[in-house]
Each structure stands twice: as structure tokens, then as C-alpha cells.
Image (cartoon, rainbow, N blue to C red; front, side):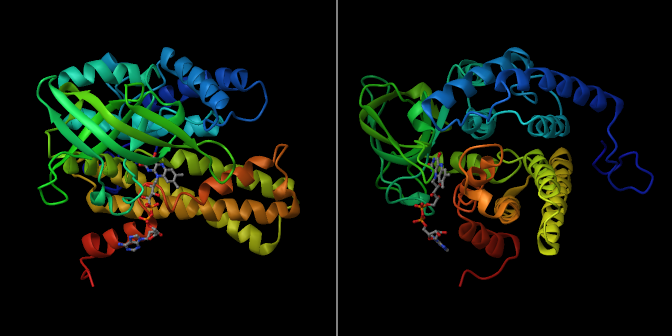
Length: 399
Ligand SMILES: Cc1cc2nc3c(=O)[nH]c(=O)nc-3n(C[C@H](O)[C@H](O)[C@H](O)COP(=O)(O)OP(=O)(O)OC[C@H]3O[C@@H](n4cnc5c(N)ncnc54)[C@H](O)[C@@H]3O)c2cc1C
């Protein structure tokens, strides 16, 4: 594929044909996933990473991925990657979802923290953390939200107090809605290290071991009854200086890099929606083709998934051209989260009363719908993303 300016397509646009090298990469990934995914699943439904047992099974699967070199394909080899291009990573994602492979419980680490470590971490931190993350020796939880700080993240009140004697900090406070936090090993989060500073300043980005003395992790049930969330209480928890990411008191800028990864390219690749749209087409066929309105909605899901793929490739072209994505990442986040809701609503409408069955082949649609409803909330709510688009992309006045 050749995306940037000066590519070899005749009309100066994007050349979306795979190169021989990319074709070989896709074939290799498809062959490996083809033999390993069904073997792992035993023909049964995917384990949910939001229960203790499912998390353990997903972790074992990710270990297999790592050992075969498919865990973090775009990372440097020293951390367990294959050092492939962003395009090849996207192609791998398409194969991954097409194969129906399990949920990545390492996601908050590999998609959000890792890019931030590449940008802001020290060599020591990268060497110590990244390979273990890729191998799922350590699984990471995200610790942004607090009971009184969600959309307004800078309102957070968990604090960090300097401990010069031991060369580190003492953390006290409460984090909430930590996805899979009950099963994770480490947490990354922001803490107020200088209470006298303006609220976006005086924050420090910490890497916190969840087994440390003073940490209490309490699971919280989700809408579907699974303990997918956790509250994390910190009571005078010691964290050494080597677990500060970026400079002390400058954590806001580091956290914004993580948020950019969450909304931009990393968290939800097009492969996820292309595969779901293909499953929707198959569902519609299995159920007699649906009504005209349902067929319209299916067609819309398919074309929206393809549009998201093309938009993503355009973003990649910009990144490869040395540009950054910036606030436009918010458009991305609104688009995929709304597409996911629409796609699942269509599936439930085609299933009719069968949609309510919680067992059997089609029951994954109800579960998928429940999770899709969360899409407009996590990674920053869509209302907040719309504010960002209005003010920072379109340049509209704040009021
Ligand atoms: C499935 C899921 C997984 C999550 N995982 C994590 C995780 O791993 N780690 C973590 O830290 N958090 C996580 N969260 C929490 C998530 O980040 C927050 O729910 C989100 O940021 C919103 O914060 P809040 O819930 O406090 O809502 P609030 O900020 O209280 O917002 C309530 C409502 O008011 C609206 N609103 C608020 N401010 C404005 C404004 N200025 N303009 C317009 N509307 C506004 C919001 O859009 C929302 O509709 C997760 C949430 C979900 C649903």
C-alpha cells in the first residue's frame, strides 16, 4: 500500500493494493491465526476478559501470541515486536478480528501506555516495562477517573507527597472505573503532586504496582453482571522515582499523549468494525434477508466500517508524512463509537425476540450491544469530543 505524497499510483492518490511484502505478511498472519484461534477456542464462545476465569484464558492466549511474535507487531524487536509499519499493523488487526480471535486484555498497556512510554519514558523504563507488557507478564490498568473527576479530569484529587528519604512519592486517594483492574498487575494514573499549582499543572504521571502495600482493589459489577471494573484505593502507597513517567508536576502533557492514543489510531482499529459488519451481513442472510429498512441499516454499517478504514489510512498517511493527529482524533472516536452502536442495534432488530437469548450462537450480539453502549462514554464522552471538535477543529467560540 502506498499512501503518502509521491506514492507510485498513477493519479497521485492513494494506492490501496498490497505490496508483495504486505501480501506475504498478511498470508503469514492469516495462516497462524487460522490454526491457533480455533484450537484455543475449542469451538466455544470467546472467553470474556471481564471475569477472573476469562481473563486468565485471554492472558494465556496472549502469551501464545507473544511467543509466536504476533503480540505487538509494530514494536521494535528488542521488546518482542516485528518492527513492521503502521499499515502492516492495521492489516494484522484486520486478520485478527476476521479470525474471531479473543479480546486483548493487555490493551490498556499496549495501546495506551506503550506509545506514551515510547515518547516520554526513559531507556530504563522502556527496557524494564515494555517486553513484560508484551508478554503479559504484567497487565496494566488505566487510572484516570475518580469519583469527582471524569470528563473534567483536571479536577482529580488523589495526591502524591514527596518522600525524599526513600527517593520517591507517597500516593493517597481513589481511582474508579478501572477496566479489568481487579485482575491487573499495574496501574498508570495521574496524581496531584503540587496542590498550590494551577489545576492542570502540579500533576504527576505515576506507574503504580497494584500489589504494593496500601493498595486495595475492589471489583465493581457492570451492566452485564461481570466484574469488569474496579475501584482502586491508595493509602500512603510508596512509589519510587523510577516509576514517574515524564517530569514530576508535568503529568498533564504526558496524560494528553495517552488520551490522544485512546482517541486516535490505537484503541479501535478498523479491523474490529469490518469484521463486525461482515458478521452482520451473515446474520442478515441467515435470518431471511431482513426488511428493507434492516437491509439499509446493514448496508450503512458496511459502508461506515469501510469509510472508517479509509479515514484511518488517511490519518496514517499524515503520520508517515511527519504530521501529528491532534484534536481530530476526537472525530475518530465519535465515528467508531456511534458506528458500533448502530451496527449492534441493527443486529438486535434483525434477531427480534431472539436477541434476548443469553445462550447460543447469537447471544454475542446482545453482549456486544451492551458494550457498544459504553463506547460513547469511555475514552472521553462523545459530548466532550464534540466540544473538542467544535472548538479546536472548527474554531467555534467556547460559548
Ligand atoms: C466501559 C468503560 C470503561 C472505562 N474504563 C476506564 C478505565 O479503565 N480507567 C478510567 O480511569 N476510567 C474508565 N472509564 C470511565 C470513563 O473515562 C468516564 O466514565 C468518562 O470519562 C466520563 O466521566 P464520568 O463518568 O465521571 O461522567 P461525567 O464527567 O460526570 O459526565 C456526565 C455527563 O455529563 C456530560 N458532560 C460533562 N462535562 C461536559 C461538558 N463540559 N460539556 C458537555 N457535556 C458534559 C458527559 O458527557 C456525560 O454525559 C470507563 C468507562 C466505561 C463506560
